[in-house]
Image (cartoon, rainbow, N blue to C red; front, side):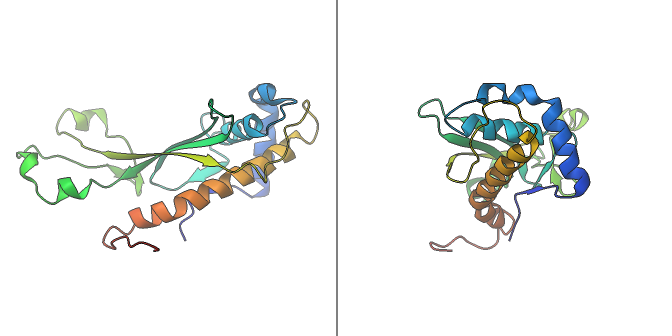
Length: 191
């Protein structure tokens, strides 16, 4: 099983998250007293991820370039937006005629993580990098209700929301990342 996201569950990590929640309590302001837990869950995610948390309380798989949680403006549901580094599609790898001897490059990697090409590399060769964008609703059932106001238990409530969001994102992304990390295995229905 691939873990797309994992939470730093060490005592230092939990204490750091509590400090981040107190330091960035303004991130939660729009959620106080909200009948929906969505804005609170989104704030809990923002506080746990860079740039608000450095290093992030939530760590991510090497292919995940970005991940955010937002309130869907259409119906107020919880929407996850994730960008993934992916290999070139088969239509471009079946033949290299389109390369025209330009030396095209795919995603550069540092210690196995997909990164943006350095500016000096962009001055030398062209890059063609595939990005998959996932926009998916997340269930609300297990999210804690948004507090009426900041209370002493705010870090614990935020952490519970963070655990639920992380679990739901992992359920969506695990099979996708497993397939991307084993490109020689063709996908089959029901796989």
